[in-house]
Image (cartoon, rainbow, N blue to C red; front, side, top):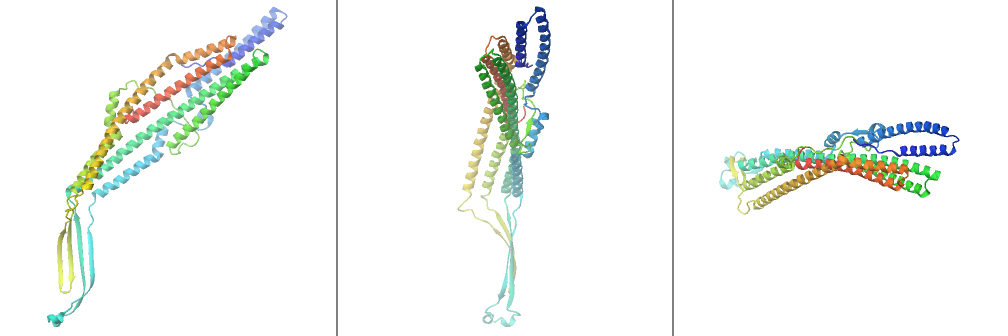
Length: 472
């Protein structure tokens, strides 16, 4: 459990106590009177010191655990958990809408692939007259020599079954690719949200530590000013203390700016659903105990949406090649027609067959073969990249977990103890103000490194989930 260092309010109170006792001894007229005054004032001062120490300890413990500069209740802003932000991102982010649009598009392509070709209907009509009837000697036999003529032709293309089946398979697999693409989009978006969430959580904890450091440095400055005013310390000690206060305020300003930047990053992933003012609540992740690299690699190969999508893309390329090969066989059109002319009425039927003499879709077949090779190469590259990512993030997580264990086992306590000793030595006059500030900076840096290590572990685990293709 983290224990806050001895506060400088306690040091200041003890220095005041020592000064009061010295003044009483120098101005006393009686040893008995000095003793009584000293005992009485010492008791009161010790009670005030004890009460101050308890209050500051509770405040520091609460701030370290919460990691927030202000609680959501105090600041009046909405607090969101990781699960709530992920849910909002999946509902509002335009990447999800884009993936849904891709699914709708492929569903339309599937409908197109299963549709039958429409028939063609053509018709002609016009006025016709019978000529040269006198030469033939049949004019007297004709009842009329003019008539409205017309004809109509109906043509229905008939696809080869193998070509139609290949086209339908291309459409079906295209829809399956879009569905897997949606899973891939959700996986990547969830990982980005988690990384941004942990970044904002780290920024909030850094801001909390920066404000704690500012409070302590301002307490030191007050002590130094009191000593300078009483003549116990030179003037430049006060100047150094003011410089440290300015540095601490700059750190607070930088921490607040980091919060704003990380807040915008999280809000962008939810398409502005969180608003400009909010905080995140939660804690960093810990390393799962039973996490083996072999099991992670097997899960990645079996379930990762990116690999599944590329496998289906390769299968789709195979069917595209089959479709182009089957398309070399011409599509037959069955025709039927009706003719009505002067002196003639006819019903006819026939076939229309394109002859592939000069071109047999060599270009389309070659293009489909090239597309398949590209998809296979992309599949191999993706497998290698994901395998590298799994190993990298797994090793990063293990290394960071070991570093956190070092912090938990003693480094935090050692830094706290070093600061306490420096404060005690400063109280006794055995150390300088610079040594106290150095100890304070070391302790704060260790706290920052500890928070950064926990953040890095959480980010590594989130990216490991992305590389594996699912939760750990």
